Image (cartoon, rainbow, N blue to C red; front, side):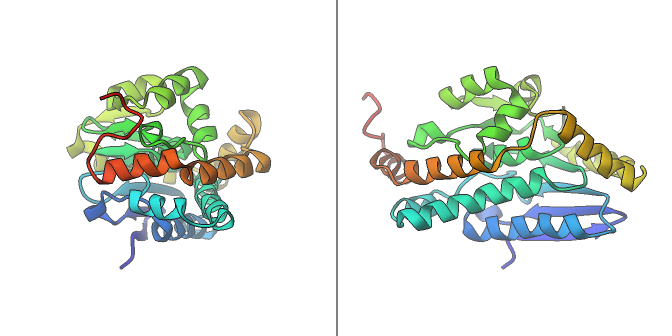
Length: 260
C-alpha cells in the first residue's frame, strides 16, 4: 500500500499522507515515500506548486510510537542513520524549489508540526490542533527544531517546546506557524484557490523568488546542525526515559517521572 499518494493537475502537485487508520503517523516507510515525493516534485517541469495534506480526520499525529520504540532499541549507528532520514525529509520539503502549501485539519503533532514549519504557506482548518508533544514522552523535537524556531520565533518555540501545550488553529496563527484559518469545509477550496493563483505566475520568477527569500532571510540549516540534531534525537529515543515515556503512552499508564 502506498502511504503517500501523488498526482499533478494544472501545475499543482498534490501530495497526500495516506495512512488514516494510524492518523497518518510517520514510520520509516512514510518518511521514505514522502521524501521521494518531494524529490519528484523538485524535478518535475510541470510542477508549479505543491499542496501537502493528510487523508482522513488528521493531517498527521507525528511519529508512529511503536516505530520510535523499536528505534530506541536499535544500535546507535542504525538510530543515527534513521534520524538522518527524517532530517532529509525536512530538508526536501524546505528546499523544494516551488512553493509548498500545507493544509492542516485535526492533529499536527511532533514531526508533523515540523512539516508545517517547512512549508511556505500553511492554512489550517478551525478544527486543527498543534503540539510539540515530545517532552511528554521523554523525547525532544531535535530534528524539526531549526524549522520550528524559524517559523514561530525563538520566544514562542521556547514556550511550546518546553510546555508541550496544545495550540488551536487561531493560537498557531498568532505564533506565525499558520498563515490563515478557515472552516474545514473551506480548507481544500482555499488551498487550491491559492495554489492556482501561484501556478498562474511566471514559474521561473516564482522559483527565483523562493530562492531569494531563502538567501536574504535566515540562512539554511547547516549540515553540522542537521547532524547534531539527528544525533540528539537518536541518543534521546534510546534513553531509559524515552523508552519509559513511549511505553507508558502505549500502555495507557502514567510515566514514572510524573507525580502521582
